[in-house]
Length: 173
Length: 363
Image 1 (cartoon, each protein chain N blue to C red):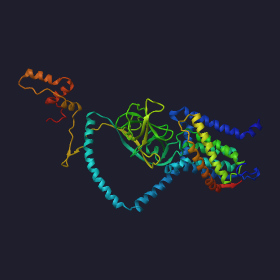
Image 2 (cartoon, rainbow over the protein chains, first blue to last red):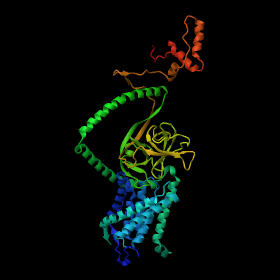
Image 3 (spheres, rainbow over the protein chains, first blue to last red):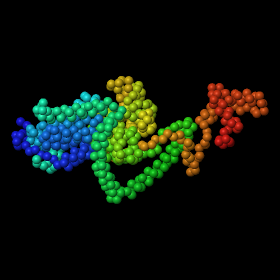
């Protein structure tokens, strides 16, 4: 039994306004780029990833989930020195997976949000490093288990608070 | 068929998106020297930077203004004591400066004599750090100066403490700096004391290692590592860091594994200097040296290194002037004193007033 499981009819499908759809990813990218120069440890969080998950589970359509993930990922790649597409591919997969999951479980529940944040962080890292090392052989070090665990817990916890804040931008369809 | 596309629309779109990005990745990786420089990738990067940078600049300026207001007008406690302490430090430094000036003057004279060409940083642009790459795999910072301020790709970026990196991409009013601890970075390096040359590379974990130092060389922790100038990006003599640990390489036993502690705290940067102009100059003359009585000593000009060598090398004793034949022989002997014929010739030239060049003072 999945956390907060509901029948399909019980789910509310929401939409996000145009301003929120454009501004939220940009703010997420801005925070991800800006905060680490003051607090280097902050780079363990992936706010664009959490926004991708939120958009995907809110709209519950795989197509928009994938496209949103793709665009956010490509823009995130644009801020780094690495080839465009690493985050793009990883976040496309996350967008697809999160929107698929969104129609199956109750994503309003804090516990499910914690698990989603942590679980999708791990999936994102797996896809990212598989592409970076397996496909284009970038000289990256595999993250340690400790690093992955801390990252999953940190992103899961941030997801609970961030999604609660982002709920304010949702409109019922 | 229509049913198939309708039924698997999402999966097909996922496949198309993935395939497109994989192809895009492959295209970028195929051109490592110009990574991501295709028109489409340039555009995506430009959009990303253009959409984020103005907000970062705004926030940075607000923060800078607030800090400046606080430190200049509000937080002035202890300024008097600090001022007194700094005055004492200035007195000490003046004493040190007079000693160093003598050494510097001597070095300048020798450089002139040896026709030594020196690369000096003649122009820099100060810039503020406004953003980062945003993840652990990216050792990159964004600064608030760009092409409009005269910056271009591959310019060195430094701070008063040492080397930071080089400009990777330059936009109209912002630029991206690749730090020296990134895995794709490399800087020509030289150990300060032993003068051994190698390459300081970043690693995937964000540390710096010095490569290509032979395993039989002696490298001790704490030794400073400077830029060698061999990479044609960084001028010679800038501090990269210090040796943290040195041991025989695990993978390559012929070389040492040298871990470098960077001179600059790369994850706490606020302001940087971009070197926009490096000049190759030959120091023309030494500055006047301060002497004990408070005056200055002007170094002699027009003396060549060969003249100094000639003065220091052994020469024949002076010959009596009345014997013409003997004079010639002695003169010949003086011109070829054993092992140093050239020096002897110089000595003889220097001894003859007729050979004194017009620009040299006759004593």
